[in-house]
Image (cartoon, rainbow, N blue to C red; front, side):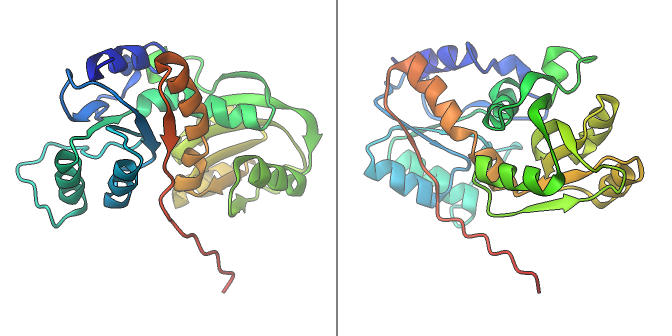
Amino acid sequence: MNIKDLLCRIDSFAPFNLSEIWDNTGLIIGDNEMPVSSICLTLDATPEVIDQAADSKCNVIITHHPLIFNPISSVDTSSLTGAVIKKAIKNDMAIISLHTNWDKSGLNVALASALNLKNIRPLQPQKKEEERFGVIGELPQKKNPDDFLKMLRDAWNLSHVIYHEAKAKKSISTAAICGGAASEFWLDALHENADVYITAEVKHNHRLAAIHKGLPIIEADHYEIENFSLSSLAKSLKKITKINVKIINPSIKIKVSAQ
C-alpha cells in the first residue's frame, strides 16, 4: 500500500470532502507513491514527534492539526513548522492531516460514546452533512452538575474542566459536544434543548450569552479533549490498513492553579 492508497482508504471513513474550505487536510509532506510501512498518529507534528516516530520506524505520521494551514513562501528551519519539515524530509517521512473531516466524522462521536450517550445525533441537523459540527445525545440517567463533571473528567481522562454555571440548570440529561475551539455553536446546543454544552477555548462573549439564556458551558483543554479521540481514530486506521498504528503523545504538562 502506498500513500495514495492510504488516502483513499481514509476517505472511506473520514471523507476529505467534509473538510472546511479554510482547512488543509490530506497529504502535507511526502510522495503519493511512497510505500507505507507503519503509521504514527498524533495531534500535532512537532520535532519531538518526528524523533519518536523515527525511533519507532514509522514512515507515515498522521496528525489531527495540519502542520501547514496557510501557503508559505519560505521555510525557516529555526521555526516550529520549518524544523518539522526539515526533520520529516531528512527521515523520509510523509505527514498527513485529518482535521475537520475527522471532527465531522468521528471525533465528537468518540467523545459522546465514551460518556455512554444515547441517541447520538448531529448538533446541527438543519445543515448539510459537510457543514455540520458537533453532536448531541442523552445520558442513561439524569445527573447533577458535580456528578456529571466527575464522570466527564474520568471518561475523557481530563486534568481539569471549567464549569460556566447557569443558575437555571439543576440537572443534566442531554449533553451537546463539539471538540476543539467551538464555543460559537452554543446557540445550536440551546436550540436542540441541551442541558449543557461541552467544548474548548470558550470565548467570553459566548459564555456570557449562553449563561444569560440558561445554558451552562463546560470548557475542557483543547489538547486533552481532542487527544482523547485518537484511540478511536487509531482503531479505524488499523481496520482499513491492517498496519500497526502507534499513538504518540508528546510530553505536554498542564498545571492548574487556583491562585
